[in-house]
Length: 456
Image (cartoon, rainbow, N blue to C red):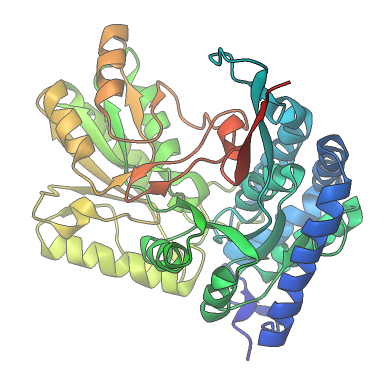
């Protein structure tokens, strides 16, 4: 039986299964993508390809409800957030469609003082492989596929095993928008088939969003075959509260930072680090709101927290909690779960000797720390193998500048959450990966920056 199956985490109902692609089918898909790069890419302009991506954006808007309901079935995202994801996805495609010509324009080397001229011309590399996760099925694809298709790269896209329906929907959208066969190819492949494809000389790069283990495995194969890699892996982002004029607003921001997508976001604020003078008030109010979160039907418009993405995800989270408690953490709220239903939990007393201190909890579980001063808050924030994002709250502008510079992360959001935008680059450092997506940098990863030097 195929592993590409839709299982609704809210109901347990099993939907359609999708057959895994054969090895021969993978070779055909790769040949199609390569042939399209050699023909279509070479005979179309950036403007023409951008126009197709704008059609992709429009189709996401037209099919908004249908697309949102698919991912509710696949991974349990509340319908309001699912609609928001589709909207953001469309905005990403439109952003690149609007700005790609400017981003990819020839760049004169102004420092060059010799005879004639010298400039950089940006062009595509060839076939790319995208390996995408289940937690944001449309958004993750858009930030990879949008810029690269406009650039002229062609794509083999392997989506998560629990997202075959959304994967098929996206494939159909690219086809409906007018992209030729081979420009964007959805493949229901396994890891061995992907490893073989990465090693193929026709493939020029690979982008993965997923776990550390998956990232390391892909990077190993890519490195052995000298292929460019972009990795967006896990995160254990700090939410640092140093001062506030409104504790209730700060607590609401922390709740939002922790629980987006049912707490299953790599850039969620997972570790609440609070200055000692504010700790007790914050802990009381934050805990009351966290433990008050109830799991509801993801198809209800006002649902805030819905079931986790799968039974295995809930099992893993429960095991992490049990291990954290065994190493001395104190649980606030109920750590009991019912199938995929997992309510809000707060952990305190998590020391550096506790494995939980260094782990990413993928679900509505927050760790709260007290820091005696700014220096200790920074020390706790940076005491992690990850370095994706971070959240900093302070009323002192000088302190904001000082602390932001010292946080070891790819992104620092100050006095706000949910501030992502298509214009802003996304990515991390340390074990959170390397490379950037979104913004101008997102179209600069898989590109040949070709020097052209003209004497006369």
